[in-house]
Amino acid sequence: MLKGSGGFEVKLSELFKNNKVFIPYITAGDPDLETTEKLIYTLEKAGADAIELGIPFSDPIADGPVIQKAQHRALVAGTTLKKIFTMVGRVRQQSSVPLLFMMSYNSVIQFGQTAFIQALKDHDIGGLVVPDLPFEESAPLCSELKAFSIPVISFVAPTTSPQRIKKITQKANGFIYLISSTGVTGERQTIETSVNDIIKNIKRTKEIPIAVGFGISTPEMAKRVAQFADGIIIGSAIVKIIEAQKQDCIDSVYEFAKSVKVALLK
Image 1 (cartoon, rainbow, N blue to C red):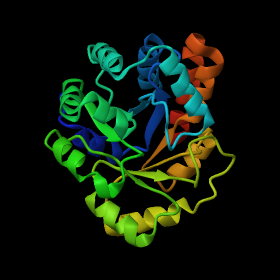
Image 2 (tube, rainbow, N blue to C red):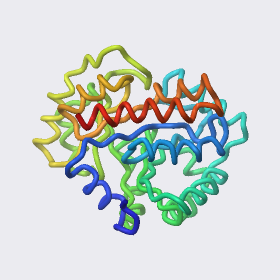
Image 3 (cartoon, rainbow, N blue to C red):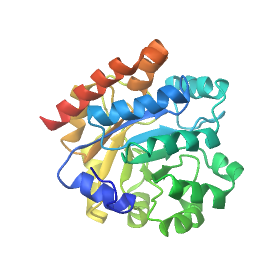
Image 4 (spheres, helix red, strand yellow):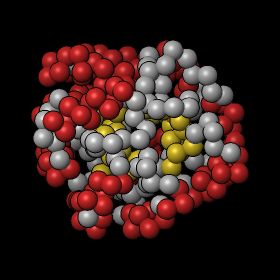
């Protein structure tokens, strides 16, 4: 639907314009890259507006047990960043669904930053989420990626001070990834944080889309959060289906993702 429409930031502005954006997360290579490729097509068919691909890393800092185990399974299966790019190359023959990489900055360094950025461009990867890259140290990477309109998505957490929110938001591109609760990724029964208050605080500084992640586990919870946010991100609830059903997860992931999208459209 957006093929050939320009950089990811252009695509994002179009996505967020009249739509509560749904961004599912899956770990690349869990249980194998062939299944990941099928899941990308499946999630797009189910209504995903963009897909966040987790790049497996041995020492993740923001991921809870569910996604940590998924990354371990992917690494044991022999997943590498080079193989992920090869898989994405196949995807790009059939789909232009926006893809984000969520990954450790260590993996960027290991791949080689210049080669990595070129690979992002060649494979139409729309943005990066890099939890272990502090805002204060992100300028060099952001600067290189800006030439290709590939944003590094900024995090805001419940513990972020108003002063720091303002500082981060002023420099942010693409959208703000608002962490709903303190702690690591994982399903929660409720979203306790005053998400609405944080969103208002961000919007006072800059009119930029805000997607809420960490802890959203059901269509009902997604709909409640989307009353205030421009989009939602769901990871662990999907990864648990993949963990339980492995290569047979496709239909179940479709049904779950479809139910989330339908809830957001109501």
